[in-house]
Image (tube, rainbow, N blue to C red):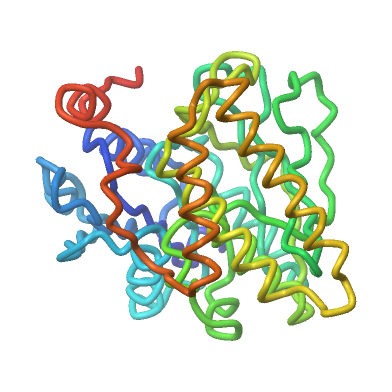
Length: 327
């Protein structure tokens, strides 16, 4: 029986304890028997006030001494899942809510399709569920640039078909445990952002296949996107890591023959820099981009302690941490 196969769900806590607890509860409501949740508390400043292992025997709680980012936190969770003997691992952002049949649908599909190594679920916006966040994606293996299918489109049934994909978002990433045994763990030099680009590329190059599965549904509380995909500008934190890691990946992947890709990157970089400073009146975001580019060139990777791109301070940080995202 499929529900006898152990599935480990890895959730890295960072930011809002209230949000993480809601994510855990949504996973516990899944209609699947053999399920274990591995919660990696990656936030020394905002620890979970309620130890998840006291909520349910299915939950294993791991407290990291410091914030090791998406990559380091998930690596700890993956290794714990391997020790538990899980056949499948679901990596899940703590700002998500899952469908009660998500795990069961993924396991059944994987058991019926042994040639598929990773499932990319259908991800919808939590606050605007009629719009699609991502429905699988396509990755350029030479540049690390990815295209998200269905991004910000109104969900009218256009993404209800299974399809092959070469990119699977780290927001909700369902994989055979054997995948990580074969390709290794996340690159902790990235810390956060673009880590799913890197691991998707490694999976594809190993000849493993990924599949978008629309009956596997997740709702994402993406704070930078509002109803209908009309979003706000990203934080300094996000701008810095996204820019730094994209250039790191570009340099790591690109062939010397593809000099044109550096030109394209440079054009996009200058255009974004000018747009943020002049059009959006956010020179602080332009500075974050420059810091990211310079650190990438200098090889300053991992977690960076620039106070300049802290996302919020004082009351604003408290408001974000305690924000009730709704039930």
